Amino acid sequence: MSDYRRIWTGNAFSNLADGVTFVALPLLAVTITKDPVQIAALSIAYALPRLLSVLGIGVVIDRVDRRRLLSIANFSRGILFAALTVLVFTETTSMMALYLVYAVMGIVETLADSAAMSILPQAVPAAKLDRANSQIAGTQTVIDEFVGPPLGGFLFGIAAAAPLLINVVAFIAAGLSYLGMRGAYKLPIEDPDIPRPSFIRQIRDGVEWAWRHKLVRLLISIGGLASIGYMIPFSFLVLYADDVLGLDPTGYGFLLSVSAVGGLLGSIVAAPLRRRIGYCGTIVAALLLGAVSFLVIAITDETWIVALALSTYIGHSVVWNVMAASVRQRITPTNMMGRVGSVGRLIGIGGLAVGAASGGVLARYLGYQIPFGIAAVLFAVSAVVVFFSRGHFKELEGADLRINSTNAE
Image 1 (tube, rainbow, N blue to C red):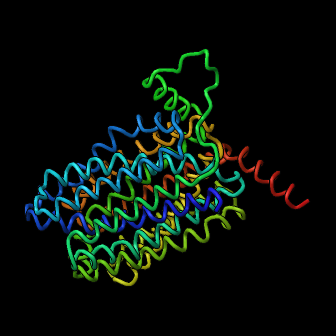
Image 2 (image 1 turned 180 degrees about the vertical axis):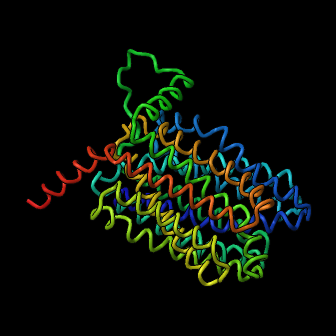
């Protein structure tokens, strides 16, 4: 099995566990408390450690063997869920224990996701990164949205510990898949006689490199705006579905499942579209599609139209993420991949927090429709910024033309 297939397999198993977790842990929390404040605090316990650790995680990824790091990250998550399974079996689970699980899970998940993104360019030729990222994104969509959540709910109905045991098995399988990779993924020390820069210095080097590179800076900035635009309406989507569309919980779940179909389609068309109109054209088209999707929702309350628009939006999101990831992977030096990626994740997580906070306020005072319109404007502005920055893509597009010309010969 090629190293790429092992990366794909490891991602698939960890995504299965993530999908199961998405449903199982909140259900477990509800068996402990009905206090909405304590339930909501789970999200804080998950997000805050990610925000605080993401830059440091980037340095770790650039310092150690990324293959071993991925294995350890998944094995440790397996151990974490094994410990939680014991608490469930012994009926000693508490909210404090769940807060700890969410905090550790957030840090390790960020580590695993960042390492997987950083190791891919070492295992896959640059010309095949679009396809590889699309395949991984498509698999993630299917497993995260269609397989994991229903499986987690079904198993929890049988026994609270059942989905946790599935996670233990899935994470161990992911760790073994990464452990079986045969390539060399430990970055060599450039000069053994020169002391390695300090941890803080390496963080600063990553931030400075990302800021100086015009295209990377552009993508990171657009990623922040896109995160705000995404979370503004999604922060109150469940209320919108209830109050405006009149959907019950089952209907809301179906709405999300339908929207995930767009993500699958997006993963299929991303690479072919890029070959036809280039990275810049594909990113601009994706962002405009996201803007149109939210604009449609802002002016209608027909459920089937909203479902179609949400599906289109998720399709745009997958295409945008695949393109942004491929571009960063192609132009970022191997020894900076972790740190530069962590800068993007920091801005993205911050954007999600800003979007969540502003989305609730906007919905409270302006109603549900207007925030969708505001989010649409953010995506439209992002598309315009990328279009007028198309010169930054010239070198990358030129490299693609040279590759295609060589292949044709």
